[in-house]
Length: 154
Figure 1 (cartoon, rainbow, N blue to C red):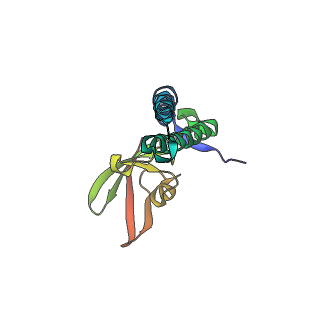
Figure 2 (figure 1 turned 90 degrees about the horizontal axis):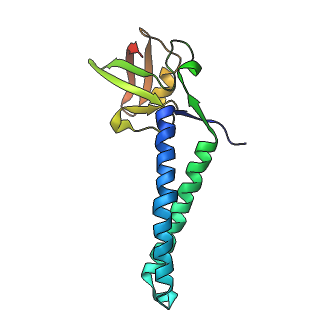
Figure 3 (figure 1 turned 30 degrees about the vertical axis):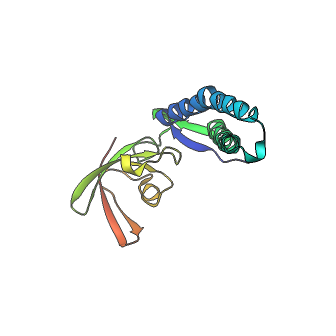
């Protein structure tokens, strides 16, 4: 049994958009490329055919993966957030090492640390879930324990 995957509404829309682009645009082009390469004769020495075939296999795998995620997704909305505590879909501002940092708590499929989107399954995400403004959490990091003070939750 596949477990439910938490997504924000925005994350669900982004995954649906990616899936649509792969299925409706990229895949047909790749199938055409494969068909053209196949028509060029000896397949054992046709690098374009091999390359197109591998790309199609990879693309089909990604399409299947996205379909599975979307099929098993639970979209976290304002009404499903657990009270005023931190959950998927909240924005949290923390103070760490004397500076303030804001993070969006998102499902694991939306995580993008460079964009300050952290998964609820990450060590920091797990520590923050359920906490409220004014709470502090400690997270084990490669350099040792790091303390975070929660300044605000939106």
